[in-house]
Amino acid sequence: VTLAGVVSNWYFYRHEPEHDTSKDIASLSLSRATTNSLGTICLGSLILSTIEFLQWTNYLLRKITKGNTSFCCLSAWLSFIDGIIGNLNNYALIYAGISGEGFYTSAIMATKLFHRNLIPGLENELTLPHITRLDVVTKIVLYIGSIIVALLCGFATFIYAVHSLQSSYGYVAGIFAAIIPYYISQFYTHLMMNTVDAAFLCYAIDFDMNKNHCNKAHEAFYNFNIQ
Image (cartoon, rainbow, N blue to C red):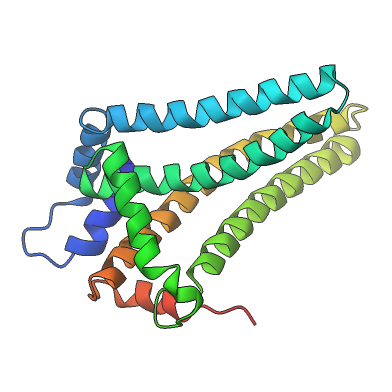
């Protein structure tokens, strides 16, 4: 929510004469996230936690019943619901960070926004073309990047421990050297993913209002195509 507030403020108001500094924007966004939007964040987290708890419970029941067909079907259904709710929850929180609305209002507005533009775009290239592919590909690239960084750090540490330090526990050092950078890079990857989602939603709002507050964003999202 904080990041969405910062991104949206930059996206829509960076050219305004009385535009606040980045420090002020971050402070205001954080303040709103921990006060006005705190209930929205808690509700979104509760919904996701409930679905994950149901998935975990279903997993245990499948183990107990040794793969009962009903629980297998329920598992597939919960996974499907988790994907939909996860995306909707994500964009609802981002919309809340942009507009300051509550969870339900943000979820409804984000859904209507995509319904008006993204779904028709499947048939009409004039409405949010290729956005879904760009969003997914960006997240995949960032995730793969974090894995590559972790593996390189782990491998370099292993080689150094074995050949330079002559340690018989080089593999242990390598494992730890891979795990720590992985979680650090995942943190920054998560920030980047949320930034992409926030910029995506700002562009969608722009597109829905037939305005252009950021030429670079319009070029990046509109012209992206995977052959």
